[in-house]
Length: 212
Ligand code: ADP
Ligand code: 5GP
Image (cartoon, rainbow, N blue to C red):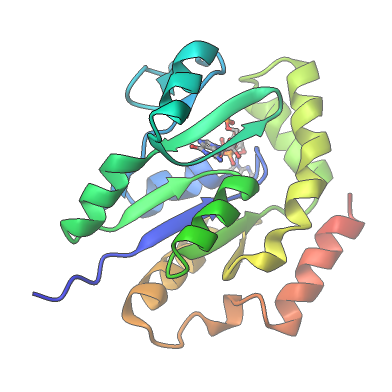
């Protein structure tokens, strides 16, 4: 039997709305949604083993030594990593895998697994990202400002992804993300307008950076 399972790697600066979009898109699609390990504290409502595996620094280091991660990186003073085995098992079983990770990890994956599909979600401006993070109110102001400071750095790497989806109006972003997902699966050209070799996409990324 042909195994056409794909690995999807999705990044966006914190506050761009990737959690919101992905929970909508993948609510009715059978994919393996990877649960990462992190050394950061759980936010209110986050459950160990569901949203993340919350590890101590020592436990995280032990996972690195056991070669247990497909990729791992530091992000705003904490470590994050993707447990390797469940991803490989899902792909081998023919099930698509979704990783929601930051840019350093995404590029580690692309290097190891060039057939992975990298999708970047953008918001209209850094100002809007800050507004959304304060509205979400899951972090203190200092943490929010650290994440906002990191946003431009992350957005500047969007051109190295395969596709970019803008999350300005949520319903449109969900529809666009679905188009990209289905096109990447089928290999047709229906999502070519979201590819990063398009002049419109390059201009859009530059505009977001200029709107900082
Ligand atoms: P991320 O997972 O990228 O950190 P979230 O999905 O948690 O981001 O979204 C951050 C905040 O922005 C949430 O409060 C969410 O409800 C809000 N949000 C998401 N998409 C939009 C949008 N298109 N317009 C306005 N607010 C949005
Ligand atoms: P948060 O603390 O907001 O949950 O996540 C912070 C950042 O870390 C986000 O950009 C998120 O996508 C990223 N992230 C989450 N899990 C992983 C992971 O396993 N590896 C990497 N490299 N980044 C991750």
